[in-house]
Image (cartoon, rainbow, N blue to C red; front, side, top):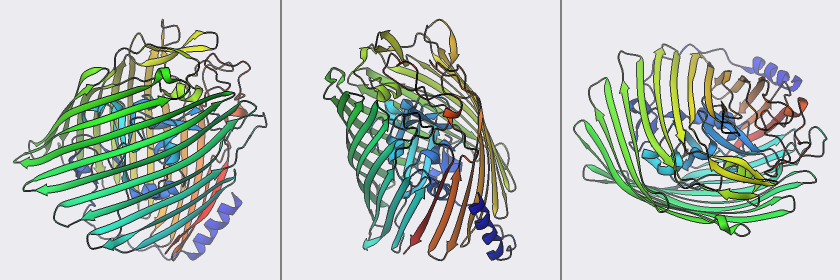
Length: 630
């Protein structure tokens, strides 16, 4: 903290006088692609939350190696640790399970139909231009894997001139990140971008109980992209990626996973007369070598995807129709009884209608013919109403499905060796709704959202005997209701953001006789951040987040977790092409192991030696580094 204060003092001595307020400017247009329409975000009937490059830059200085923090500090999103031994985590949207979240890169499933519990930890944010988030059932847009919502990672487009940047980061817990980014033109109409990063974390036992609270890992990845644009409505983006990671945690009982991923994809748009033809395709292969104590499990995941669509505007209507084919395959060496291959051909249609200057509608529908679960219909209807200047109301509702597999957050944490029953014979279905009201008040923006969902047939882990477990559909639905509120205020160079989220998600308990809150889902959470930033000088930010009580599942030490605060601070100083930064997280040094042990006194029936992670395990962390542009 003293170092941070010294840096702040240096800022105060070197800052130029505050300039006068700038004159009014035209509002910057943010174009979103997650809804297929490529429209301004304010004109979308379906609410799409966009995290811009400014927010990405801020979180890049906190965790350069992954996007977990970028998403976890977004209202309505929660990054939940699923395996304390390995640090694996999934992304929950508005209280729904992480397996229902579809993670895309430029609209492509480059991380698989299900990204898995370590996918978020393997994606560096340096080459992201923006992040688009759709909350609630989005199967009408993206099929079975988008039951809970979609996160579309939009790549950073190459600049007109050559850019090169290197980032070096070091943390107080023994973490090191080295990231390289470059982009620029290579020929007329052709440009490129290239990302390379290597990340390393030393295995740490914070409470000296013989079990790692911070898993150790080493990772390297490459991501080249090539962009072609003829300037006359024809555009193509080609991408490829390689990633290698070895991760190790636990104690005498070793938990480890080795990951190898390769992917390639293309996104193209062609202006043909008055219509736009879109063609997308990708392939991903990812192999794992899991170790759970003396048990070894090896597997391979493959996802292939292809889609063609045509968009045409006629009067008040913008219509998109198309077809897609996706294949998801899983091959396990030791547990081959759970192997599967899904083929899903699909047709879809979307109609966006401008009813009047103040009213727009969007209707979309999709029919999937699943090779195992048959034909599935997924509709969605959204409305945008602007009752008066400065007011925006969005209403939306839809339905969709999820094709169950043996791979859930729990089975990825404990392996499939002890799984004796997988009794899914039908899809998991869901319906969701939302009502969103936004108001602009000069320099302030206010947003309130009410949402709800109902999931039937959700798989849950249940004890099936000594050292055995089963995956069985719940006998009654998982019901979720909640509300989000966000206030953003810009005052000169300072931006204040306050947020609050209420979520009540209930499901049958382990006895299937009573309803209880879904474990690890706080009903209340809130945040308050302030960021001062001046172009060419730097930025200073502080943040405070509050996480409410959570119901705990089969925890021998307590049934409900206490609420806790979380504080952080960031300082960045720009000196020409040089940028120095210092960031501190968890200033109050909250650690779960200060309340209770992480390791269970007796091993659980599914094989776990640890309780669930309901609070930070790493404690106070400082990271510092340098960014150099060329």
